[in-house]
Length: 172
Image 1 (cartoon, rainbow, N blue to C red):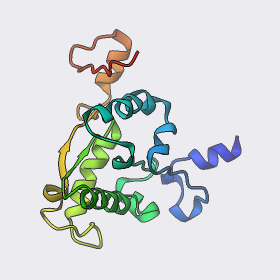
Image 2 (image 1 turned 30 degrees about the vertical axis):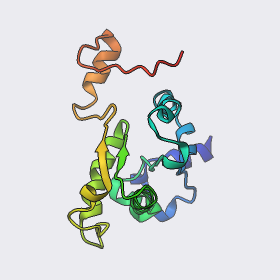
Image 3 (image 1 turned 135 degrees about the vertical axis):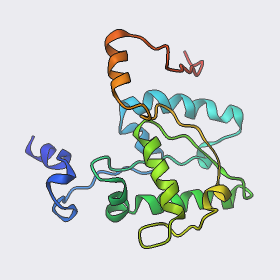
């Protein structure tokens, strides 16, 4: 239990250097880290070949939620990895922009990424003012906390979902 608490403690309680254990999965395997995200993303993975996407043309990114968004770059170079992977996908797919599907807090993280990638170094990715326009075809946000958590909590207690869009993959 002590080891678990050391890994899961908030990054605000210690400096980055004090945390000796890093848990940041990258690629498609990061989908299996969280059961909740698996319920959403696995149907997307199964259905994507029907509309022309294959596993080799997809990249799933994860970030360490215990860090501030900017510190994920300092600690793991997560923002730079996302930038490099998007540039690689655009280059290997005939210059076509990527479709990004962030989920939950990843929606806010991706908004941060889009500002970061166009900002000049050292605080930004140095992609220039048209980087997003040249590399991203579309963004489909799923479950972003734009209205905050209170609506979600109220929905859990009342089962009310009139303001929530429901999508079905058709997988039974």
